[in-house]
Structures are given as C-alpha cells and as structure tokens.
Image (cartoon, rainbow, N blue to C red):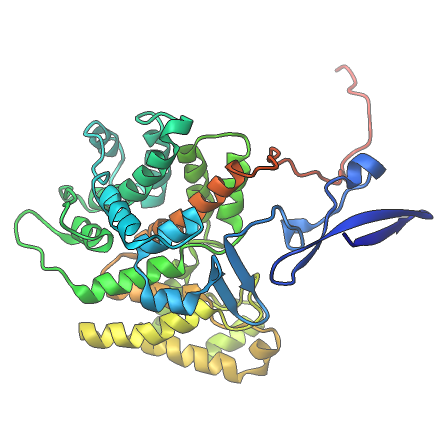
Length: 418
C-alpha cells in the first residue's frame, strides 16, 4: 500500500493512500489524531471522504453519473423505478422472477395502518408536506419492529408506503378526501392516482405522466454523499432505526439549498416573467450579486450535470405529448442559452443542474411547488436506504459519526460571583 507524507514541525507522518476502482485517490487520516494529536479542517466536508461506498460513482469534471456501474443515460432510458430501487439497495440487477416478486411486495405493502389517518387529521391545512412526511415516516417506527428479521421487510414497507404518505399529505393540504392505493397499478400509476383522483369522477391514467414520473424518480435516486445522504449515514451510525434515519434525511433535504432548489428555480423564472422577461437585466443583477441564479452550478459537477441533459430533452417531449405550452419552459431555455453565451458563467463553470428542469416538468404534471421537495424525497429514498444498508452491513464495522472541530472561542476564564 502506498502512502503520503505529512511533515509537521520537523516530524514526518506516513498516511495510507486508498485507491478507488475508478482511480480516485484518498489519503486515510482516520488515525491522525490518535497518533499525532492533529486533525484536518475541511469546512463543509468538500474535500473529505466520509466512507468507502460501492453504490454511486460521479466524475464531476467529465459529467459522469453511474448507479452500481451502470451509466445513468442507459438506466433512464431502459429501466423502471422499481428495478432501480432493487439495483441500488441490493447491489445487482434482479432476475425477472426477483423483479416480479419485488414489485408484488411493493404493491401489497402500500396501505397505511388505519390509525395513521388520525395523525393526518391533527395537522393544519397549511402544514408543509415535508413536515408531514418527516413526522409520518418517523411514526412508522411505532407500528413496525426494528429487528434483524424485519430489516428487509421494513425496506419494502417504506418504499411502498412513502408514496401513500406523500399523496395523503397533499390531499390534506387541499382539503380533499384521501384516495386509497390499488393493487392493479404500477408504483407510478398508483401514486398519480392517489394524488389526483377524486371520488366524484373516474380517474384516467396518463402513460405520458407515468413515464415522466419514472424518469424523474430515477434521476433523483442517488447522488453519492450529498447533505441528506450524509445525514442518513450519520444518524444511522448511532444505530437509529431505518424510519428515524430516513426522517432525518427528509429534514435535511427540505432545505432550499438542497432539495428545495427546484422550487426556487420556478420562483426565479416567475419573477423574471413578472418583470417583463428581461433576461439580460436579470443576468446583470446576478453578476452584481443582487440575486442568485438558481438551477445553475453544482458542488460536484464542474461540467454539465448529465441528469439536466436528460431532463432538458425530456421536457420538450413531455410538453408536446401533453399539449402544454408553458412560458416558463420557453424562458428557461432562453435563460440557459443566454447564460452559456456569457463568459462570466462559462468561466465559473455554471451549467444547468438537475433542478433547473425538474421543477418545470413537475409543474406540467400538475404537481404544486410545495410538493416538489416531497417528489425529490420519493426519488432519493432508495439511495438513502442503500447507503444505510451498506453502512450497517460493512464487514469491517462502522463507527458512530463524530466530526472534530477547531475551537476558536474564549480561553479559560473565571465565572465570578455576582
């Protein structure tokens, strides 16, 4: 094993070098403090690897995203969301028989315990769906046992019931009666029916919406050690149960700088439109830091976000098939073209990310902006579970996550009596 050398005050310290399967190199500092008393300081963990993982590979410079080795472009074109769930969580593609059983299990665990309806009744109509989701997912732990024997079943339960929770939360917010799931529908079709059906009329399925939802869920399924996934691992490292860990991840995702970004894109585009659609004026205000350009740039990608490319191509197709003309989509395209012609944004590698087009597509599907982050959570769920499961099954064991700090406060001083 090769090593790196750290020289501090005349002393040389050898640090092991870890090499990933894609050529990534990490310097192992896990024993640095124990052996030297030193720690590394990395604000926001931007240069810190918190784990070794075999789930998702990202090359931000080349714009590459792969789930378990499979390119996102191929998965988005050829897979259904339920198969991606299986792939991420179990590490391999299912056989036809395994996939059939998996889909059957996900279908037959979609119902919620009837007592949970009382929880929904206690929330005010103005309650944000993400607040309801976080609370209701945590509440599932009171109905199902956290035992090794139930581990796989609990994973199926949360994947199946999450869409029911999300749809019920939406129905609560608009004062409509809840719609129960049906066992003859796919994951996507079931969710859309629970969201938009009403008892007073028949609900007509839309293959276009189902395909659009399938694509969006797949593109959000995992993205390595982002804020919510890291939260999932951190909370799970304390041996918190699956439901509690997911609830914490949902809360992390709720923030506008993470899962709430696609809602901010819609709000930004609406503001531009209300100001007459003057893109150059808006971009000038971005350059002077008066406003932020939402949906551009990424912490990891320094090239095009491959998910944004896929969504941009899908947006035109979805809008054409639905017969929808949305001025926000036209404005978004114009904004992208204007920004990519401007050296200010190109030099800073500010390219569109997945949030730039996802919100516009959700909007076309009839999903309100306050539900955008919930949709993100539904898609990201298999990735969270995969990371939680990978950590729990690590043969070398895992430590409770406990970052250090560099203290910069007051030195010791007396607490004088009054």
